[in-house]
Amino acid sequence: MLDVSTKLSNMDTLAEYRRELKRKPQLRNLFLELTLRCNERCLHCGSSCGDVSSEELSVVEYDRLLREVREDFGVQKKMLCITGGEPLLRREFFEIMEIAYGLGFSWGMTSNGTLITPEVARDLKRMGMRTISVSIDGLEQTNDAFRRTPGGYRRAMEGIENLLSVGGWRSVQVTTVVTHENISQLDDLFYIFDKMDIDSWRVINIEPIGRAKQHPELLLTPDDYRTMFEFIRQKRIAGQPVCYGCSHYLGTEYEREVRDWYFLCTAGLYTASIMANGDITACLDIERRPEFVQGNIRRDRFSKVWYEGFKEFRCELSERSEQCRGCKDAKYCRGDAFHSYSFDENRPEVCFKGILF
Image 1 (cartoon, rainbow, N blue to C red):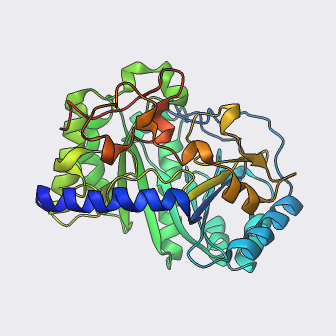
Image 2: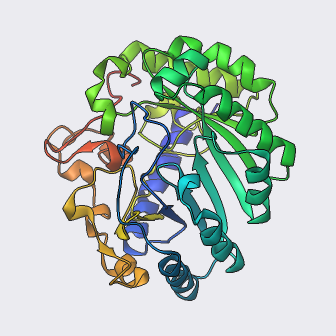
């Protein structure tokens, strides 16, 4: 554990770095939302995916986009993050990824795992996938109810095993969204995952966004939050590969204790996304408002948008919020993450002041 003075010094340095990063953003992560279709109907889905029909980019359009990105940014220190919906539902999935791999991009994927047969796992390896995160949101009955998919847990676990059988990945990760209903299952889940040869278990809280707003009974209480963060911290102290996600400022007690880095919302700084219809935005979890669409790759060159747009994301949310003004921690949280900020009410939906610090 780091002492508080060291953490404050490090976070002061990070605050200075962020100021420079706003002037000179560095594209590192480009998310490609291949489809909004999904074979699950998760109660927390920020994008409200499912039986969604949307105009999807063609293979030719992805080819042009990726060639432009390589020409304008190069492929070194760039990661394509493939997501959806369930990306494997995209009929041309392997055509698109063959293009990306052939151009030299590193890529990873977020998936519900239910479609990863032994053959699919081998094809993913052949197309150069390096990392994957598979969602398991509780023990079998809880997971299937939460994701509204009978048999989803069993198929996802089989998908993970199929990946592990192929082997050679940089990282196979399981991600669990913690809710008020499944938080009591963390120990049981750890026992299950500890027996598997996965590389890490990412434990994150349900966010009050998307469909989750319709299910307030699933949101965590202050005691739930404290329980979850202490669970993660104790596992990490014991040397276990358990971590929290990228969201939210956690205060000096938990920053750098539950993940390997300090909080920094990278939307528009390191991170950009291409929606299924070609719209350009920062993070796909951010509320889909017209003012956050920076352009569309069908009419705009991505690099021009990256360098000349994204102004909404290169500001401090804390300067917009009455709740944040005068708060001594605003220097470090900067109004928290863009995806969990209420732009209608100008306040963060999640603030751990009074809960963790």
